[in-house]
Length: 541
Picture 1 (cartoon, helix red, strand yellow):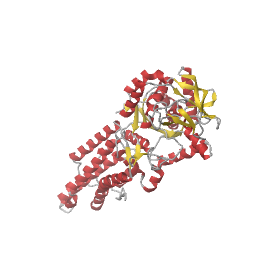
Picture 2: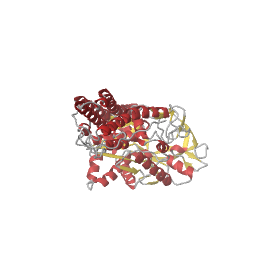
Picture 3: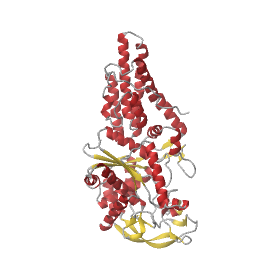
Picture 4: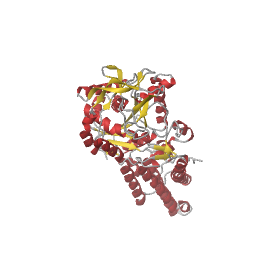
């Protein structure tokens, strides 16, 4: 549990906007949205921010390939991701762009602070240079051999071998990716951040870091092994200019996480006239709980490089880093170039967004690999959403509407209230353990109990009896409707649109998205009219 008197800032890793959204992206954003919605149900004040990561070599590379400006690429996919997030019900309080003026200003302010404090220094390095293109080759413009394991690698990472981050000039046998020519090394002045100076502070930070163990343990291993200073400038025109150097921009992994800070600023400007004080309390005075949701592939950046920058610039550190496992498709690595990918826009043309949200958190524990296949998706939808939850809702509501037309009279049974309370406790415990599968399991276990309870009590026989039996029947129906209401409250963070439909069918006139967790045990009012029962989920053929 988080301290009740502190606001919670939830951030989701910034999508890199040089292509469309695929299912692998959503492993970060859907759980972050579920977490945020559940915290609000528990009474926390929450701010949820994200934005597009718009700088770096890959975007420049894509723009040159298309013959357009980087800005055009960025704007196109920035709008695309906003549409996808809206369609999926992922509701950020603010969704910005790292190319926004506020992020340029905040980045330059932090970099100047690092320079003034002596944490940034000049260094002459030998960089890959293409004679044919007459240019230095940053990051993704060069490929060659990893100096550590010998495998084929790209300029900034050994993506085919040991996975190590590569500094400019480290790659062996460089080749220009633009023209295919062999590159040579030429001397160039760049700027480095003294990451190696923060080993002790980072180890202390990581020991106390909440979140998922994979993030903490992976980062601790790197800190204890060896920290190398990071080159924080690149030979590009597109990006945030390095202070006093018009020919260099800051490395994308400098300005991207600073987006969390600038997006918080912009979000608070919309909420309060006293936004500057609110911002300082979060990012300068450590008076909020900061939770980062990320993918496993960027643990190093968020648990080592980013906190070191924050320590150096005297900003608040994150309290938790929640890292999801990777997504595979049919047991194979997700690959856009090989066509092994599921595009979210195509998925949403065929299936309801909530079914995808449900699958992403129910099929695998958050830190484990999630393998998507159409057979697995079909099984989850048909055997759980249709057969358990959908069947419960349609069956009970239809029976209640036919025989009573409203919520019947009756007292809630101790057995029912105890089951609801147990489900609530299990769900809350799972949320604060960042185990979204257990959260869903607790909710669906309650739905399964409701089905069995209704079947066990056989109200269809009681309704045919005398006055006492009909009264008993009404009480059974009311208790089952209460169970359904409790399930609806618990699953709203997971399936907000479908639970809004179910809330209406229960005859509730309040906002399901605004009700607190305590609503699970608030008795339905006898005599309350019920809505028209409708099928919640369609079977996947």
